[in-house]
Length: 172
Image (cartoon, rainbow, N blue to C red; front, top):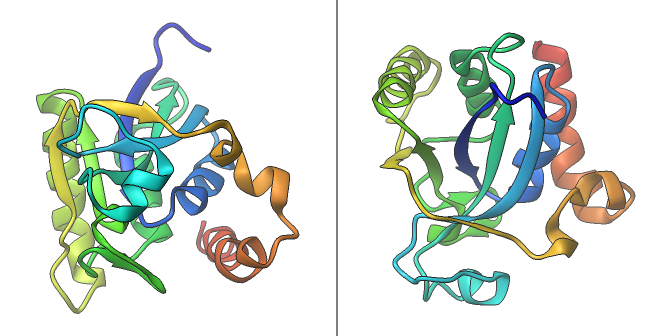
C-alpha cells in the first residue's frame, strides 16, 4: 500500500455492497468491512445486528490521492446507496444500515459537506448521512471481508449487490 494513502470510513447499508463497489474503483488500495459510530467499546456482527452497540456497518477505505480524490470517492459512495432513507437500505432496516461518513480531519469534513450539497439535487428527500469525526473502527469478522468476491453466486449477491455494481458500471 502507498505510504501516502488516505482513509475514510463510509457506511451505506450492508457493508458487503459498499465493499464490492469500492473494490472496483481505480485508486482504491484497500477496503475493510467493519463497524463504527457506536457507543460500545467493541463491536461484532451479532451485537451490531441486534442494535445494542449503536454501530453502523461500514467500510474503511484506503486510497492513493495521486490516483483518485476524495470528492470522487464520495460521489461513488452516493451512487452505491440511498442516503435519504434513515436507518435503512432496501430490506435492511435498523440503525446499523444508516448512511454514514467517518471523516479523519477538517478537510475531509468540508469536502464531505460540499459533495452532500452538490448531490442533494439528485434526490427528492433530504440526505440524512451522519457525519462523525475520527470514529473508532472495528474490523468485521473474516467471513465478512471480501464477501462479494468470494460469494458472488449467492442469492443476496446476485439480487442486491450485482444490480448496484451494474448501475455503477453504466453510470461511470
